[in-house]
Length: 93
Image 1: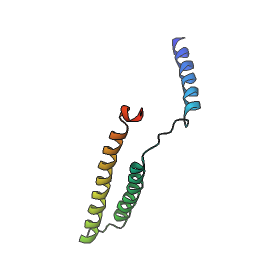
Image 2: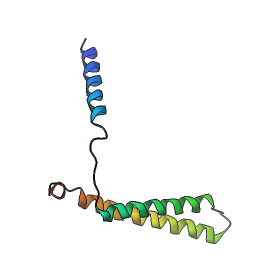
Image 3: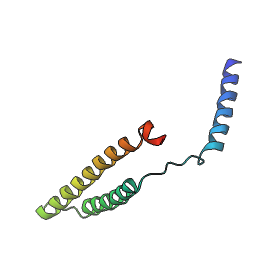
Image 4: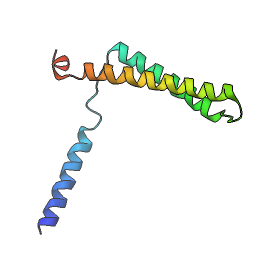
């Protein structure tokens, strides 16, 4: 019987969660939205570099490494920006 109660409570929780999903949105500052767009561009550049990768071609390897550095750079910037923005005291202002 406890298992049935647990599963019923879980079903109830899931129903409540599904009703709330999509009602909360996080509005990001323009700097982070711009970084997001930059991240998409850099990921696409990296994807193209990987797709066109030719292990016998030095410039192909360089392009892939440069593209990866761009992805890593924007990831670091995004982490810093999100960490700063998501601090509770910033969200409560």
